[in-house]
Structures are given as C-alpha cells and as structure tokens.
Length: 495
Image 1 (cartoon, rainbow, N blue to C red):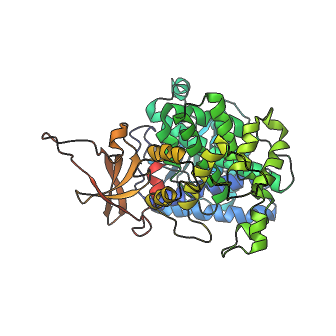
Image 2 (cartoon, rainbow, N blue to C red):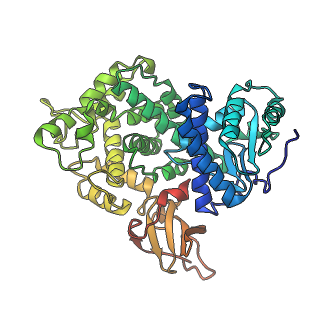
Image 3 (cartoon, one colour):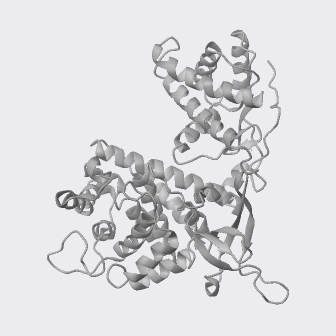
C-alpha cells in the first residue's frame, strides 16, 4: 500500500509556525497524544484480548472519532521535534510532556513520521494498529511499508502511515542553538527537568533508588542556556502548575538562581552546583506527610514543627545520594540555609550564630518570589509579580540579602517577566523580557495582547524603548493588571 499525503500538510516548524488557531482541535490533539501513549504502554503488558485494555481502547476511539467528525481526515505528524495535527502545531503542557516525549521517541525509533485516519475507526482496527506499531523493529527503514501491508492484511483501509521525514542539516541545527531554536531547546530542558525532579522525589518518598544523574545533565544544559540568553528560561518560570507545584517550583527556583549566579560571574562549574542545589532545595519535603504539605488551612504548632525540619531532612537525603559524585559542601549548606533569613529568625533554629551561605541567600530570594507568585492550595490567587517584589523590598533588611535582592530585581525587571500591563496606547501587554539597557528597566519588551471574541490573541512584540521621529516614546506602561481578573493565561505566551 502506498503512503499518502495528509489533506492539509503541516508547515515546517520554525519562526513561521502558526499559533494555535482552534483551541478545541488543540485540546483534542493533546488528548489524542495522551491516549496513544497509554495504549502503547498498556499493549506491552496485556495482549489484545485482555479485558484490561478495553476501557483504554474505547476512550481512545472516542477521541479519534470525535476528531474525524470535526475534521473528516486527521493527520498526526512529526515535524522536527513537534507534533502537528493537520496544519496545527500541538503545544505540550506540564501534564502532557511525558506523553509527548514518549510518543515522539517511540515513533522516531521505529521511523514512523505520520499516521493518517481517513475515516471512522472501529475497535478491531485500533487494536490492530497499536499492536502492529509496537511489534515494529527499531531502526528498520521499511517500517512504514511493512506497517501499511500489515494493516491491509487486516482489511484496514481507514489508517495509513508514512515514514519519518529527515531534513538535511537538522542535526547541525540542533547543536548550533540558533536564536529560533534556543527557545525550543529551553522548553524541552524545562519540561524534562520537571519530569526528572518528579521521578527523583517520588523514588525517595517510596524509599527506592533515585537516579539523579539525569538531573545533573539537565542542570548543565540549563547553565548553557542561561549563559547564552537568560530570558529564554526566565520566560518559562511563568508556567505555574497548581497540581505539580512541588516539581514546577523546584525548577523555577533553579532558573532564577542560575540567572542570579550568572550576574554574579560564577563559573560554569559553580553554576551547575548552584542549579542542582536549587533543584533539590526542597527535597526534604519528600519526607513530610502529604496531609501536612497539602493542608488547605493554617498548620498547627506540631505540623509547623514538622515542616520546619525539611531543610535538615534535605541535607540527610543529599548526603546519601551517591550518584551526585563528590558533593561540594556549599551544596549541602545551601539546602540547610535556604530558610534561615538574614537575621537568623528562620529555620532550622541555630544554637550558634553563623553567616548564611551565598547559595542559601540566592535560593531564599528565588524560593520566596516563585512561591508568592504561584497559586497554592491555601492561596488560590497568588500575588502579582509586582506585589511580590514590593513585599520582598519591604522585608529586605530582615529576610533577604539587600544586594542580592537588588540584583534579582535587575534580573526580572521593575516590571517582572510575565506581568500583565496596560499601556498609554490603551493596549494590554505581557512583559516578555527586561530591556537590554539597565537604564531602561521601566521600558521592557512587551507581547501585545488583544482581547476579542475568540479570547486573547498575540498581536506582536514591541520594545517600549522605541521612539517616534520626535524623540517621544511610542508606548509607555500606565499600570500593572491582575491576569486572574482578566482570565489571561500568561504562561501560554511563553510556550
């Protein structure tokens, strides 16, 4: 059976990648990727006749056939490191990253680049499709042909597959880290690190072997990105996942800490150590009972006493993680110190006064800022970035190192990345990155947002330092706005 082209071929990923046009199609597409992931996984455990697989097949059929009713023909295709559903690029979320990663890896290993559903699919056809896919030999150039022949032998003419397309020069592009590619690399490092820290903490909680070597490799990649262009990963910190708070928060704190370390002139080795320390700063919470961590109300004295032990518990865990190799003492001390506060009024309680380590002081600022700007189980509406910085400035002499806090504000800007602002042009915008010139901290680069009938839409990126022919600024910030009041999802503009 010959491979066919989709009804609407997806565009090549890059600068001209279209933004999401149809939110419903995007949601169904993400759901389809998740269903495929589950089906492929479970097909490795059960045979096709086992009742355990029935529920997953039915759920997948519902998603596929809903898409076919909507689109008539659907094509799920790999373009570089992205999936396109028809001509629309699917943007993965924190929750969906594992499914995207698995599907992308498995299809690439089997050299399958596209699956086309030409009409409604039944239970038998979907089962045959999944089990045939999983039986393919990795790296076989004839897989697409063999796959289509197998489907034809089962009298299935509603599904067609195409081979993985390889584009000359892709490999070189990956390593060149061109500006348009860095953002994609940044996203992958961000989401992979969330998955890696989740795996480590889950294993420690279950008293299983926790492999932290992957975390170390990802920290090194993050260091490289921060040195190249810190704004890429700083933009990712606008992603605040309520359900995955512990892991999302750890990665955000690491990004802020690395960016501060870069401003302080740390070497790559020291930056990597700082990045790992920040990633693991809350690892002691893996030993805190879940009912205490997720309590929606205030903690009582006993619960608060338990919570305050997590830095010390973290130190004990780190000292037992053999895979980290030789542990620099400043990593251990940084975890111990990150709640001490400048006046030592924090915790753990010290019997002898000591200076707080530089790692500890850096992580404390990053930790506090991200915690204040993230929805929590006991505070559903967080502080805006501007409110969080105002609170931190008020407490700078007691809780924070004033010099490091000044560096942090210079890093995120007077109007921090992710702030929703109103301009004097009556336009709304999201702060994308601070100005390159320190004199223009109040004139950041802005993503313009237009609120129409279809919700908010990105209009373009503008630099507030731009002037007209008479030397007057074209646009200025009038005030900041609360994105929760305007129902604007800030994070999607950085994905």
